[in-house]
Figure: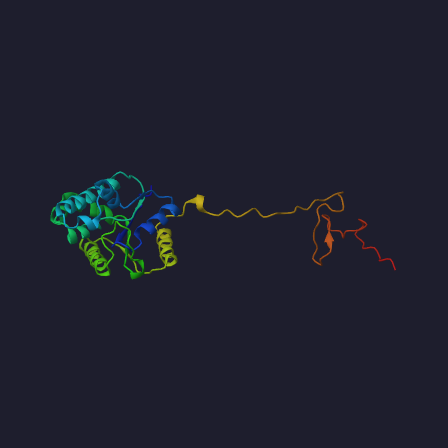
Length: 243
């Protein structure tokens, strides 16, 4: 029995993680664990930029994101795709005071071992992808680079095998994913495959028939009937033209 496949897209914000996770969801029919940070932020009715100075709120937010990610993955017994994994630890290091508490939580080591068994794609940053959406931690290029460096540090520190995604065009990213998934035995959802239309065929019919029945193209371009005789008087002899 094939082991369930867990697919993770990790990296800094504004690197295209959610876009690729949605593509995997739609192409391969896998359930998707959406970025839980957005849900937590909505429940708290907060905006990241406005709560930066209230460290107690930031601490609670980062701790809750950590809890929700682990719980969301535990709820899926089969394959899934997620647009994050342990990434919020990088943000906790940058903006909160709870990293030591989260790093010493016994569940973190078990969770990292679970991530090791998945397919982890590490998306590297590009300036062209920076955009404001009211939720992200900030789209300053220097901030993105700091988070990118911390995510890579955790990948190396915990010995998590990963596949770097350095290319920017979506076409190249998709080609990379398709090849990796093919090698892993994951095929696209059959409902998305195009089914070719059936090819029309003409069967040869022997015996008496109307002049138009069973006509197939002749090699010379003259129409022939199903018994192979030239169309005309039915004798197989082409009549002489009237002069």
